Length: 178
Length: 251
Image (cartoon, rainbow over all chains, first blue to last red):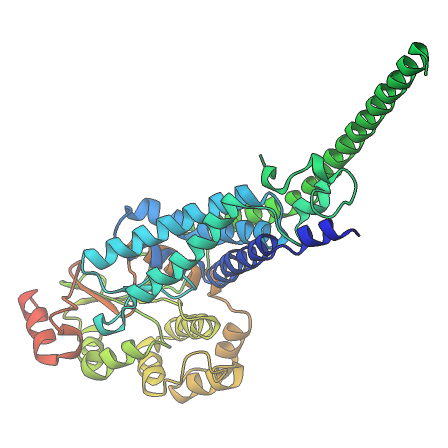
């Protein structure tokens, strides 16, 4: 391996992207799995936002955990990272919007992000930390939309863009997922 | 150096460049193919997991009208257990035997509700939700087994009096059996009802019905279909609760 390639492989951008993938993907995977185990609770958590009518909130509650799991796996494995990051970021934007809206309307609910959810005692709401946490995940997502190329990703293995020594100039990291 | 050899050298350079380019293109093609194969091989199972998961949860969330339900369960009441079907007003209690807030309500107002169910002065419907996990499902099923023997209210009270921390692995077969025997259930039939999880699907129906009825937490108590005011503290104030009942026509 030549020096230039080595530098590319371990560039801070690639490592940061790896970190972002693991944080956002891992969080989605974990949150999705916790909720998929308790579908009725997940549906109750969505209803508690009082944004969607019950007939829509329930199907969303039942299906969202599985979508989170899917996007989480994609990000952790590093396959179609940009698409996964767009989906993940979109979810975080929706979550931030939902939590902010609940806060603004004076509801007392748990976000139900990692299971649980529903109404809680007003003293037990945690809107600020819930929003900050989602903002961190959103930043990870936004970074990956911008720079999806990262270490130990199936994207890189499949294309040889990062790991292959040959013809490296044909494939600039910046062009990944074009 | 002759003109010809210069020309042939430059031609050779061009040819070499073309060859390099062709090689690079082949390599790129190969890389694209690899990428597609890897993508398909990985994406397919991921999609499968998501689609299967989504389908299962959507199917499970449907109320199943073919389930084995206790005799006093009423389909039009979301499969809740109905006491005094023709009485008025109606009181609905959505609860989870493991939920501490339900125990708090029970400690304060449970005797009142129990009395109404027994003396026929109201139509009382109990809905056993099971958000809190496996042991909630076990207890809800056990409650249905008890209802089938005419001992639901007694069993219900016993469970709240002996509530344990959520999912502490306390409510296994032997403890649930002991609870039933303690309120006078016939051990043999009751135990087989527990073992087979006879009403487990009915328990799912209650949850699905609760979702449709927009019940987001336990306990949720409704008088004539209207939830009692949580913010006003009715749940934990017997005077306010009795007043709400009187206002609804309970004598």
